[in-house]
Length: 199
Image (cartoon, rainbow, N blue to C red; front, side, top):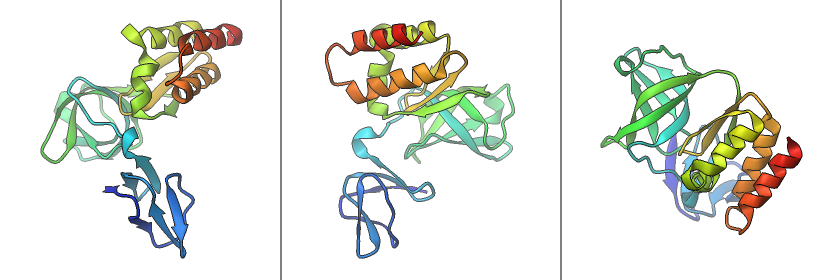
């Protein structure tokens, strides 16, 4: 269960080590405005939140299979829904999927279309606000990452990136560099140097 919290709001009645939170008198309080996931005990600052837009590609995990609809965990304040009639594949809880946002309904649920099962591989989580820098102008950055490491890379606008094959370690290192240094100049050249040295 997720909820929006403000600085000073109590998260838990017990002490937890969570980034963006403090412990006072054995209780945990938020120090930022953000989204708190009570099940995962994770706090995502508001600046890092993703707001679904039609056409967005997302990566998520099937949370529930309700026969006619699949509920998708998008690691965001919004859940995703895939109607089984819109899918050529069958999914079960735990499956990773890539899909496209069709619309956002009144309950802040992202209705998803064109779902594709993702098998194997590795997930990398980044701040959604860094995704445009990871993609690069004209998707150039992500094309370079894919080509130079021979890795399949599927980027979700919700901040979840799926990697499979090739140099997973090198892609992960490059993604971390982009996220940490997105605000600096000359980043593209540094990433290219990293890929050349690591290849």
